[in-house]
Image: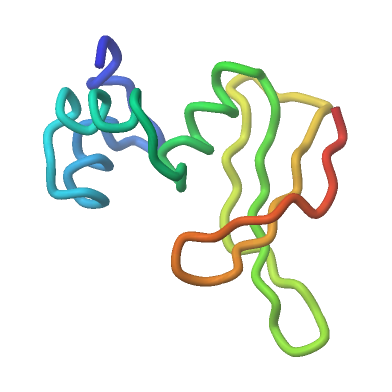
Amino acid sequence: MRNADLKISETPIRDWVKWDSGSTVQSYARRMSVGGWGGGIEMAACARLKKVNVHVYERSGSRFKRISCFDAPGGSTRTAHVLYRGGVHYDAIQLLL
């Protein structure tokens, strides 16, 4: 809630929250504080807070294709690789922490 104007990919978090949930940052943060599943917004926050890159992949036939990168500002040598499995489900592929 305190960082609604923080920019991720040149767009304020308040806009990402509006696009993703249709709600304000305040209502989204209150709802998420009592439970919920994380998505792109939370991966971007994790990258910043934990100073770790989060790379998201999707299965494409027998291969994996990277579909999103949430890189830690200033760079990081640590990367969490996550598999997007459709809908709102993610699984860890490999955590290099």
